[in-house]
Length: 334
Image (cartoon, rainbow, N blue to C red; front, side, top):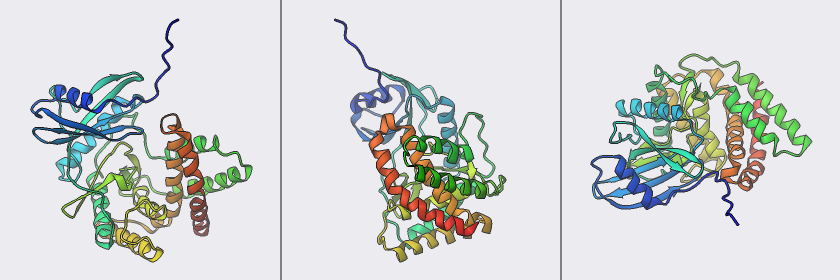
């Protein structure tokens, strides 16, 4: 009787073996000491320690397009040239930004970064202000930087509302919740479509600035992981700081409401000190708070065959009430 091999959606490489493979593709990095899996999900992240230094290995899912990864690499190189605090990419022995390896599910691409020995920041008024300034710099440094691949996903209405909405509706059995969801998304669409699609309001956005994508080293903040960057409204990036406060995902000295409001004000005022933010954009923040929730949920349901549907369903229940609160704030501004 022949063995049946089931299809694989997302494999996880054995860390030490991957580390040795990386060293065969790069010159002058020393010999392997150890390699650890740090995180797994849509992509996998490893820390490689050699006799020379430490590095970060990022292994993309097999459905990630090569052109999108190359655009991400180009952006990181551009920011590094501006001395923006983000880990630098290392070229391999063929002077390429990445190489590919084979997995049961197909080809997966690999990037290698310098390792920066830092930690996750605990936000206070000073670090919130520093973070607002850093996001303003990110937007300023990319005002005239262009994406060359037409296949790179834009952070537009389709990406932020339409696609997430499709995936979320598959999980909503309640007619009442579907009705509310339609009301919410149409209100967001109306507000966002009125925003300019010109610089400085529109341009390169990080797209997924969450707490585990921020690091602090020697009291200086830095930003990691530009996988979800794209052309979009800059206020979407700005809103994610407030979204993190609302959802309790921002490590802070105090999580009381007054403190959270002051953290947000510190961040926003610092951004506005270094970059123009119009009143129209500020009024659109409640819409982008909802859009952020939609995007997060849509992503989790879209990748539920890898991340698991249980987590997506749990997060839908937790995020729903906050999304409805933001809806009330949004409707007041219409």
